[in-house]
Amino acid sequence: MGAVSKPLSRFWEWGRNIVCVGRNYAEHAKEMGSAPPAEPLLFLKPSSAYVREGAPIVRPYYCRALHHEVELGVVVGRGARAVPRDAAMQHVAGYALCLDMTARDTQDECKRKGLPWTLAKGFGTSCAVSDFVPKEQIPDPHKLQIWLKVNGKMRQEGDTSSMIFSIPYLISYISHIFPLEEGDLILTGSPKGVGAVEVDDEIEAGIRDVVSVRFKVAQEAPESKI
Ligand SMILES: CC(=O)CC(=O)C(=O)O
Ligand SMILES: [Mg+2]
Image (cartoon, rainbow, N blue to C red; front, side, top):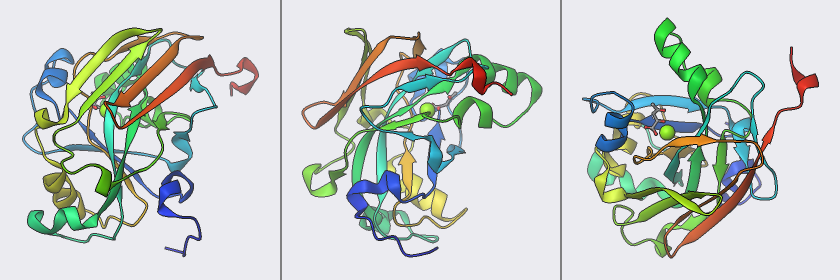
């Protein structure tokens, strides 16, 4: 992959992969009517899915049930190809608070039809991210509280110690399927409490005592329809 002149602290500008993990919290899998997975459930978002504070999260024209999912993101700092679990954390540069925004109605239809989740998970602004947090600032990423509010009301509070598959496991597992590259982001899954947001809602979310974000929800302009 071509050299990138931007600092890793601006990982969202690198155009790298966004690798997402699903059903990595048992209570969330349960609320979705699914059993906890035997191995990580993976899907990708395009790097054009990133949105940063100051711009809105846009509900796609085909969606009537846009859901929030607050997640811990792991920023890859060194390429990883088939790395063992006990060496995995050496490939981490830092973290971010992320929202895996999901067109839930579309996802349900994709599940029914056996289709990939691309329309449900990959639309523009479906990956909201905070500022980069260097790994030195987080001694143990499995001892963090992540939270999310909508219009000031708490919706999600999760502890990363509840992950089914740990960050080293995820990095090793993914790197045995495809190489991870510097600048990639891994979304490690949502705790329970996912729910719908409406146009003009305000989402606040954060890693407690570390970083927080605030986003408004907007509707995609009708003229953008195909
Ligand atoms: C059912 C899902 O959308 C899985 C997912 O994204 C998660 O965080 O779990
Ligand atoms: Mg998710």
